[in-house]
Amino acid sequence: HLREAVQSVRAPEVHAMGYTGKGVGIAILDSGVDAQYHPGLAWGTKTVQNVKVAADMRELVTFDPGTPAVAAELFVENVPNSETSVGHGTHVAGIAAGSGAGPSDGIYRGVAPDAHVVGIGAGDVLFVLWTLVGFDYILENREKYNIQVVNNSWGITGAYDPEDPVVLASKKLYDAGIAVVFSAGNEGPGQNTLNPYSAAPWVLSVAAGCKLYVADPTNSVSLCEDESNAGRARVLAYFSSRGIPGAPLVHPDVTPPGANVVSARAALGLVMNSTDLLSDAQSCNISLQHFDHYTCASGTSMSAPVVTGIIALMEEASRGRLTPEQAIEA
Image 1 (cartoon, one colour):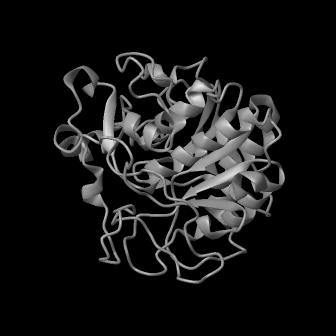
Image 2 (cartoon, one colour; image 1 turned 90 degrees about the horizontal axis):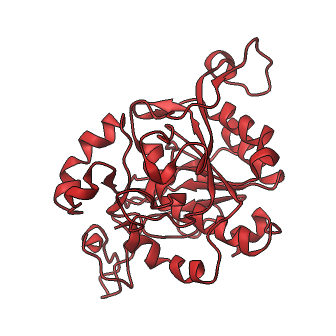
Image 3 (cartoon, helix red, strand yellow; image 1 turned 30 degrees about the horizontal axis):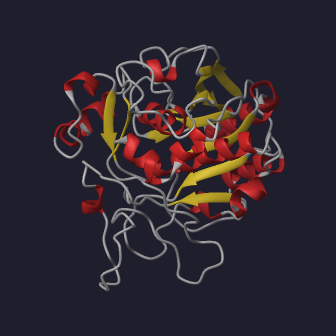
């Protein structure tokens, strides 16, 4: 069912042209990545670095990224499994760049299956906490791992604040040549429900849609709606956050599939492994041979890495010349 999402955005046609994300680094700033258990995200080959953040004293004490602090950044590198409780980041990483190795036999390949992953575990349970240190790590290691795009399947609610530390940090990544992708949020059909981190003009804000144009055994269209009641194709998922009509910034930029997407399961992803159990068995009908390593989820968290993977394909096709501005315009 990741297969249907990948087919919906025509990624296999790009793969057939020879572009699979080879050499491109994708940073997954999330709850972590299980590169130890999951063969499609294998440690050392697919996942080339995995970091677990313990704390960032700037955020813990001052909430001001410009204020020096003693032992400001506390993290551990080279952790085969940085996913210790949620499973969210592992699922996201599989969508963007899972190789399809192991029991899936290539069925659950990601959008950019030959890109390499830099996992940054910046949270646990239901929270991504230490985001600024994650951005710092990406900036400091961009050249080492050729990081061209960072996926952020997390956010907050409220008004867009151009002076927010996360917004300012995302601009630094953009200025350094890194495309920044944020999920639009899952706050439903009301106006002005957008994740404000995704509203910055240098960020790609990603809504969630259904898997159109292909046969879809998950019936993802059941999670979409025709708000116009005019018989149009049901494209946008009911849970996907909206912006403000006519607003220059507060709106999603693009809508790829994000409903009923099957991707990598983390061994210690207790949160997703329990909350998604019903959808695994019913909505997505995951076969027994795949159940141990794959789980089903819906959200703009799942649609954002589709775009992240597409940017990796574009970066390879441009021979490394794609700028973040060109990625947004494309």
